[in-house]
Image 1 (spheres, rainbow, N blue to C red):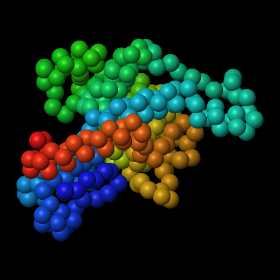
Image 2 (image 1 turned 60 degrees about the vertical axis):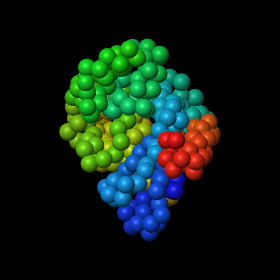
Image 3 (image 1 turned 90 degrees about the vertical axis):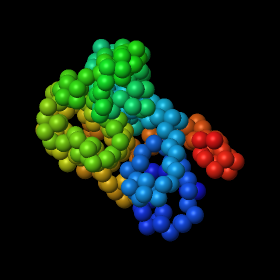
Image 4 (image 1 turned 180 degrees about the vertical axis):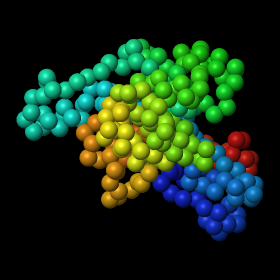
Length: 269
């Protein structure tokens, strides 16, 4: 068996080098770092553990929205240098604003429910909408609608989709131009879903009020974001799921899966 996270690549060659491999456990949710075609061809079992990390990522997304809304990073930086900028910084309430969620899945639905609790109007879109899904989200206070309405009307646009061919650069120059002037964008999904060059252009032109990214097109040591010089941008190093609580829960679930597999030959027991 093979247990893996994000930040590593699981290509066909690696899996082929382990002829006795039967089970792969993704300690998280994203599958953009594994060759799924080879996995299916070999009939390998794959188990994801999306739940514990989803809560942590959703909380970080909300924290990033608050940081943008109240210019927390700028206030902290100025105060550390002796600047009492109380009358220079502009804040915005989350209450009463529209929260647009691109991808209302495990993470997106949690973000939406948090937004509703703060008095936001939550709207979202999914890849495969249905009346049943719309009703389920409506019960959570989230109105399901089309991608275009989410994009054009959100005060805060939160990206929560996985990275795959249909979502790569789905937020590009054309989509950013359609966003509401003065809106904020938060990406806690995957680098490559948002075109960072186009986002940089939109921010420098004053089209958007700010952006926060936990995921980036280029990640790792010595990678500097093209947005790093902008004061209205918050950047974090892919720490969405990195809470002690979430990682402990993931660890417990991994042990349960391994025990079931050892006892029955199937991860689900």
